[in-house]
Length: 371
Image (tube, rainbow, N blue to C red; front, side, top):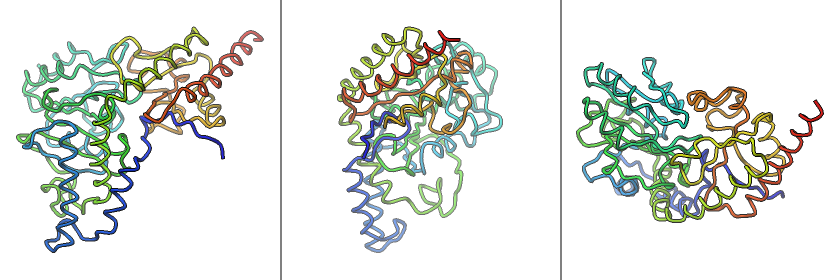
């Protein structure tokens, strides 16, 4: 069987063995966490233990609300309910941009950083009943927003700040209090937990409005029986991701080596966000003249998993909306692929990627010369 080189950790991280064990252990428990008998109490204990592990992973205070959801998208939607206005950057994830019909967008600069002057102008024209929602780390470029500055600005005008930290957790230090945020979205499968589990962490004073009140679970904010096994895996994975944060230094070294070699092979290649703070594992690279789909196909045939950006856009031929917001020409944006590394990647993986990349570049150069 062909060896698979997995370089798409921003789409989903491989399930951790410890998370799998936690999931399997809960499957034998039985019991509904809303039931008061012994089986129900055991299930409830699993849910509450997971809640505390997630809370600790982002250094949220004991008073903070931790509402479990089906993932980051649902958490984002919950954060944007019940306010008059919602503002976000033009380079956000689709789960934010499409969460409301009246979403107001603020432009970003060429690196994908939100325009603080424009944000201030927008906030000054409102009544304060607003939420500003931004990704801590862009899922495609890995670019980190200046969350403290955004928080200061939002609070000056009486707005709340919601941060989508789905990509940041486990890759950089995430501190709910130090960042000054009011709400934060998280997702299990980005840190080695299972799909189908996420959370919204919110300050105690934030008045959330339920998407589906249902049976009253999660403090009446998310009806439906909790995903006990998924949450067990989420809690374990979140705790481990934070404990292993120092290992991201080695991942960054691999990422930097890959980028250096890419530019040596193809001097005309573009690495988006390269000159600003980014996640240590993420490269969004354009090879002019070679469509992303062609690159992904060639990589896949060689057993290498990369993507054309957001996993939510897979299978579509449209250029990255993030790059469009950054002012990148469509022809260049359509040649961009995302490489996102994890702890399992090694030097040989980088060499495998570069071998295919070099072949793509040389074939394109030969084609251009013959034209």
